[in-house]
Image 1: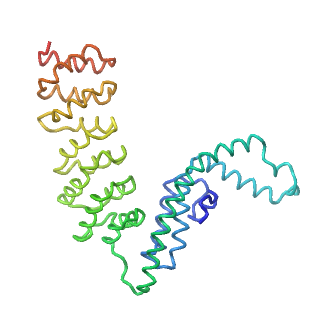
Image 2 (image 1 turned 90 degrees about the horizontal axis):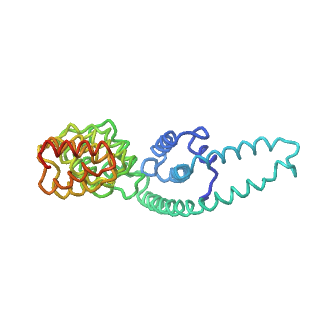
Image 3 (image 1 turned 180 degrees about the vertical axis):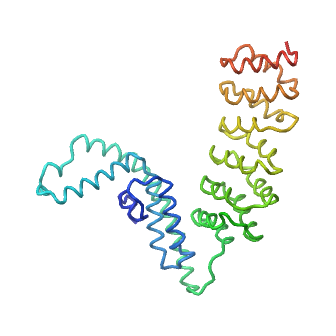
Length: 330
């Protein structure tokens, strides 16, 4: 497989306009995958799916500057082909600046190509196993169910299965496979985007959130926000907010604190950890607002007094000072 295929060629393979947004590229890949994946189209679709997967992976890893440069090269080649100076003209030679820039791009491109090559080799091996199995069983085999695809070790197959579940109610077998997938593999942004589109009952939401809770700290910021919105109407909302306090993003922690509904503040270890995030006003302000409305543990009093006196942020000093006055901590 040509790991360094031209970016302009990738757009052609996926059937999108050159320079299309990544969302359009992703949608085009999913449409192709749904028609030519070996699980769905049989062994005859393997090569087309392989080419589409390679093109999608190439475009996904490319920077906007690389895409722009590739399109400029394609355009210049098209204009140059019809020129009377096509052989030996000045336009055929790159300037020194262009060669220097190309060398700099190559350094970073080599690293990306090595990573991409590894991913594509793994994809090829998986496809080869699928094709080999299909050849042994024949084309008369039963179509692979959504539940089976959710249990696949290949992330692309699992993503296709999630797309098939969108706007639908999963049956018992499929839902059990979905929960098993969420417990086994940390969900990425694409999986989370499809997950929130599934038509679930209140009890199913509880099971899904329970499966995700141990790994919420691995979610991206966007996926964490999406999960909190999706789970806000469920009985698991409070426990989900508590789990989100372990997320690395200050914005996610601030959102979880602002949504806190329990009468008690967070547990002692979590409270100590959050109060020590002195440089993060975004976390301290909602935390202090929460502590003012609820009882404040004795061990936190000295810390709050210190924040009211010495913190660099005026907002933090004001909120900490209001707690000191309201709780008589002077």
